[in-house]
Image 1 (tube, rainbow, N blue to C red):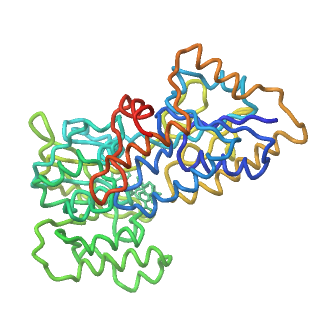
Image 2 (cartoon, rainbow, N blue to C red):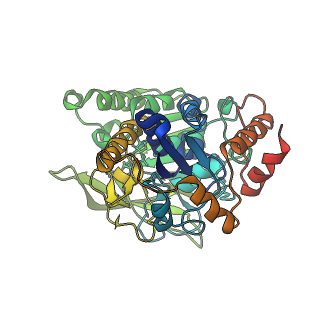
Image 3 (cartoon, rainbow, N blue to C red):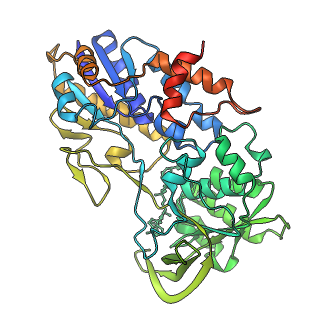
Length: 437
Ligand code: NAP
């Protein structure tokens, strides 16, 4: 018997568990550890609540967890409850699948004023993550600024623009849908420090903006390159840019909210009297390497909500080699130290779709198999050793069965048309273990 501990129960963690299950069958025991009492990481707390078809992948992870050789160990925080060094004494392999839950810092003057929030916090707020449920972002409007030209910036802008009715079928948290319903925001400026050909937005997500009930996307035609230049783009990017061209060509619809794409616009400061009131933006141009260079021309965009969606990073863990510049664990093809591996965003940085983590998870299992060679057992104790240690420390562990009870309670309390209403307090999650059937 071999034992693997996976730290983090998001997509990368579950694909790794699935791959181990397929590779070794009953010869493996996998424990998936998460600091929250509930599984699925980014699927639960990161994927947009109005993208339920993407979230449905959790059914696949559930199937992994229904087999005896994979166990969910929730409400256990690596660090205070158990260290990586301790896990290494108990498991033949430890895999870090901790994702990239922290925001890259917006390093400009005023970047820490109240009203400036990172996308991890804002997304966590509307998705009911316990750490961010109390964020209470300023939504009085009329202006908001979203910094970044990736898919997360699109998610944030779309959520700010939707009507209550448009959230039908989503699992956006009640506190967020109620606050957004009373939002006074009528202009969301989406700042890209480069141009339309340098966006990191995918066509499906960008196209959605063209069908919003009460908001119209606006693109200044002067920002678009000559249409012939689109032929040089790869097909997905060409489709995205085609959407931008459609937005630029569209007539005014009179919808009350505008989503203003502001290209060649780098934020250089955020100003205000004790809170964010305006973003100072510098016009940029592209150099020969397509990097943005300031032109010296500046202007101000009034906004008391500024969401910085400029990418994420992995929080370091004591004793684990870390690449500070790239915000991820130092690794060679997922190998960190003997017996310690990393997978997903914690390995390669925050890029790619949920599905990108599948080959990542399968790949790391192959590397573990190579390192184990032909030896049948590593002589480590696995589960019983972890259980003993956690019991000594008084940890209140949640099992997969507990999660199923929490899930049933969340489903039962959902508002009409919504699949679930998540508990946003850890204590409420823990209490639901005993309340539901
Ligand atoms: P991202 O795709 O890396 O985009 C980050 C954006 O921030 C880029 O436009 C970047 O511009 C900009 N940026 C970085 N530093 C900046 C700065 N200092 N000032 C101004 N702008 C700055 O990151 P993301 O949007 O967080 O997405 C993370 C990953 O999740 C991506 O792979 C994304 O596709 C994926 N995702 C997918 C979906 C979906 O499929 N529905 C939804 C959400 C997220 P430069 O290009 O100039 O650096």
